[in-house]
Image 1 (cartoon, rainbow, N blue to C red):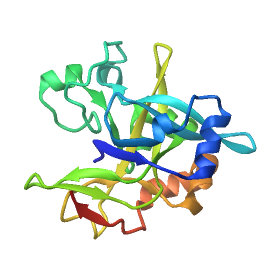
Image 2 (cartoon, helix red, strand yellow; image 1 turned 60 degrees about the vertical axis):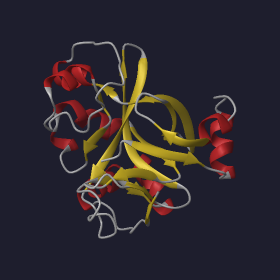
Image 3 (tube, helix red, strand yellow; image 1 turned 180 degrees about the horizontal axis):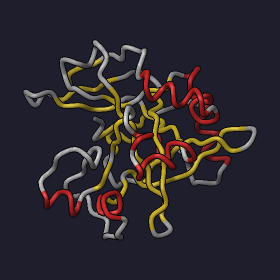
Image 4 (cartoon, rainbow, N blue to C red; image 1 turned 45 degrees about the horizontal axis):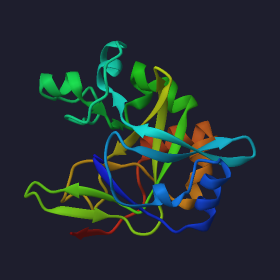
Amino acid sequence: MCGRYQAWIEDEELIAIIEREKKGNASRYLTRSEVFPGDDIPVLYGGGYFLRAKIVKWGYPFAEAKTDRPISLTLAGALADPTECAPPKMQRSGLVINARSETAMEKRFFREDVVNRRVAVPTSGYYEWSAEKQKYHIGQGLVYLAGMTHVFEGVEHAVILTTRPTLSVESIHNRMPLILGQHELENWLYDDYFSREKLKRGNSCQPEAVAV
């Protein structure tokens, strides 16, 4: 899964996209050592002939995902795909931060979002913990994570898609974010056929994992 990521990015093109949208100083969002569920995050989306940026909250309200009933947002018990097991208290109060790419098109709640509201989350890698509680930083340079968004009570929220782990990650965790290579970024945002295949195919890259 992906429960935290790093956003320490100096990419001039990305900075220009965010600042062009008048979303404030891009450094506010791109100089963070750790980004947590519930934080405001920048995402890229396909807007006509060029990429655009917007600021959303990371995580869907969990009760919305299960029952379509509004709840108050809280950081307590951030969750992965809501179809996965979790203690009842966490289910009632958490945020859905991840969704399985392999089944997103089959889930009533996620289907429309992954078809119509795909986004890319810019990061400089993400964090994962092994069964032995060792923390790892995974990925180098500018790393885009595949995601989707939904509006709840006038506020737009994002979920990061996950997939099977690659060889470089499988010894650490049994899930990892769906990573977009630079050559895949626009295809993910604009091309419906490519996006469906990417959901099924998963990652072809082998991101480096470094204990921190």
